[in-house]
Each structure stands twice: as structure tokens, then as C-alpha cells.
Length: 304
Image (cartoon, rainbow, N blue to C red):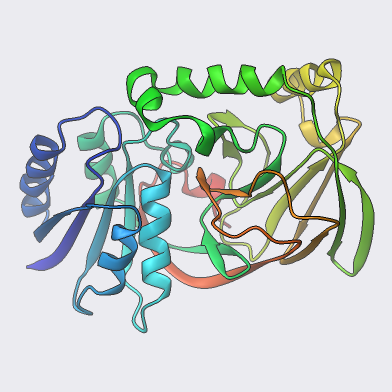
């Protein structure tokens, strides 16, 4: 029998985690897996658990929000022998789960995964700190980590929307930034920067034609500041391609160097959590070597 480990964040979502975990245990047994269930006890625990697992584990299942899976990936990257990973969303926005073609039923998601395909996944790092699908700095990007956990648990996605409205009504600050990518260097005043390896962020489809294993990540930089321009950009999210809106600059690269004139007021947000360090220089790169077991439904769309 193959061996699996279920790493469950008890604070993600509203499901009864004990009941759900044992339902997962039954399903995994039906698919030929033994399973060890481990509940995380503190921030960073999933990273420690994954890094210290035995080498003979056949599948590691992350059950929680996008931040939980970020920890699992970070732990796997610390290992000499990488393990096969998968992720089942239980968080508030669940951008990764939606990207991978999963719905809101965790049991159905598990069955789709176990009948799925193994894929290599690019992982980005910012100053050697991994992120799976997005890092952001500036306007709106701090909404994810600034929204209180209790509010997210009670209101779900609405909690993010309320905090986004609050951010919308606040003055937009520009930061002076020099960035280098693809052999070119630019300097300007900007209101936000997004570095992505997925099309979906904050519950919205932001970008088009993103591949998660092409050795590149997507960068979207903006200098918009007025409420009128912000509303216009949100409109384009629903009707067209935001990368073609005036005030937005888009490119793909495998290495990005950012230099700020001064440390940012708010820190980078990575996979919905706050980057611990705050500095004036950041380098974003690609790391290879992560393998995921994923549902088949969206593979042709998000992988080459």
C-alpha cells in the first residue's frame, strides 16, 4: 500500500476538520493509500512537517488555504528528496484550487486528484522565499493579510471585499522603483506591482494564457492613482485584457530585480500572507523540482 500524509490546517474554512479528515482517510484507503493525518498547531508548522517527513512518502496532501500550501511547498524545497504534493482548498478565496479546476466540495476534489496526473510546477522565490502563484506590493495587495482572520471566518470572501473598499477609499501612494528584466532597466513611480505564476488572484481572473511550467512568471506593474482609473481597470478585468489598459505594463521573464528608493510602507504579500522581511532590493527567480498530482480538467489550459 502506498503511503500518504494529510497536513490539515484546522483554522482554514468552516468545515469540521476532524470529520473531513477521516472521510479523506476512507477515500485514500479505497485508492490504495495508507494515511497519516497531522493537524498544524502554529504558523509555519506545515513547513516543518513537510521538511521532516520520511523519504518513502508517496503523496503529501495539503488541506487548507493557499498559505498552507505555500508552507508545504516551502518545506518540500528544503528537502534533499522532494515529495509528490497536492493541495485541496479550504480557505477564503482558494485561488489555487480554482486554478487547478477544483470546486467547493473537498471530497469531490480529492477524488479528482487521485484520478489525476503528475505535473512539474514552477515555483517563484522572492529573495529566496518561495511563493506558489503571486507576490504583490502596493495598492490593494495588502488586503489579503490585512483582513482579520476572524472576519474571514465569519464573512468569507465578503471580508476581503469590505477591506478592498476601505483600501479603494484611501489615498493611493506611489513608490519610486527601478526594475530590471529581460536585459532592460526602467525607473518610475508606481502604485502596485504583481508577480504571478497563475491567472487568478483575489478571486478574480487577472491575466490570460498563463502557463505554470514554462520557466517564466508574469509581471504586471501600474502607475494608476485616481479612483476613476481604478474603476476603469476593474471594468477591463471583466470585459477585456487588463494588460492593454493605459497605465499598466506587462511582461514575462525568468528573473526580475526590483530596487526601491526606500523600504515600502506595507510589505509584499505572497500567496495571501505577509512577507516577513522589508528591504529596498528584491530579486524574483524560478525554482524547478516541485511535482504535483492534479485533476485533469484544467491541465491543457495551465500547462504546456
